[in-house]
Length: 464
Image 1 (cartoon, rainbow, N blue to C red):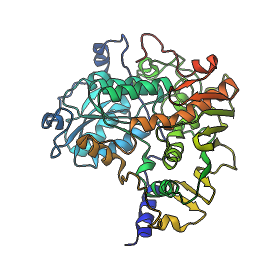
Image 2: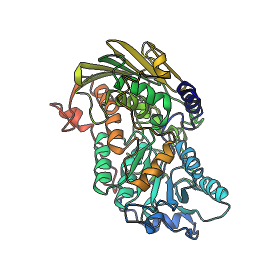
Image 3: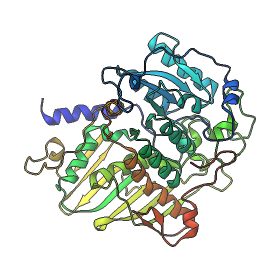
Image 4: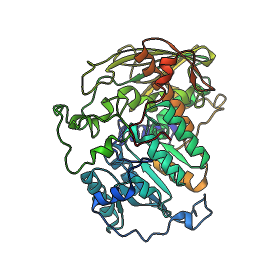
């Protein structure tokens, strides 16, 4: 089979990829004063713990025995949770043994799928993720929760020595992202980000074309993202405050964010269109196409020094208040200019690198270049840089849990991939260009913008 045929097969696979957008439902609670007993009491669920022996018990403390299955707990069952869990269920070297959710309906749905797959009732249910993280017989966790819960749950998992498959963006704020990176590094955890495009052949090949200099010196990069709002939950007409349904612990769901009335249209799935819990299309997608842009530039641990964004926002009293149209101009090292945009026809969806000798563009299900033959074969005399290859994003995570080697999308990469989106949003909110110190990770000479690097937590929740 020719290399071009292989690439076509992987391209077809990318078109069938299960997770076409982002985020997921969520679940909650972390280092607050809310007691674990209260969480357990509210569930009314008592299921025997599974009898499977964790891999960590059969190998060295930080290295599960290669011959044994990795035990996995899942948190969240909205958009990404079911797809991620299904992917792990299909892999024979792991077993899902626990599920956590603050929505009883979502929790039961997850149990039905997991126990149905194994034809038993061994998967244990949790309302408080801290109780699940405390289990010594769980090696790793899959986190698919709203952005405002990423930091608390991720750091709790790392503290309890769990390896983590976590969704993008890494967190709701840059400060929270920094906390996650620190916790993962301190506890020597394996982290895989749900930036699954890195495990698709066309994206890897596009990045290799750039890294091997086929387009010459890169001068400009265009990152096209979606605009507007997408009604994933089909609840756009349910925008009136009401009492939360009895199946949802809304007090915990809103967690560290500002308390606001329950509105069905801004909870499950559509939480991403409310800045109190999400980051709009910009932050929902920044961990995909900007992540690939950085990969091609060899900027996984670098970033922009100047950022200027403009955007269009709904009225201040709108339930969905995230930016609907935006354009961000960024200055990168080596005199590279980047544009990140949504809703601007001149910036095509996907990632495009433009160089002195050509260009290359890639998106889900499509790719193009000034010399299209590059995708079939990079000339041998120029093929010096061969990027990390993963053909299955979830399997790559499990392989790295065993080997203790970095995944294809480690936590540091996720952090730097999302920073341009966070800074672009901050620039839009303050209405001016901002300057960023990449090494110190601080905004320069702008106290107002600096305040937006973090957000206050609602008591009794505390920053990690």
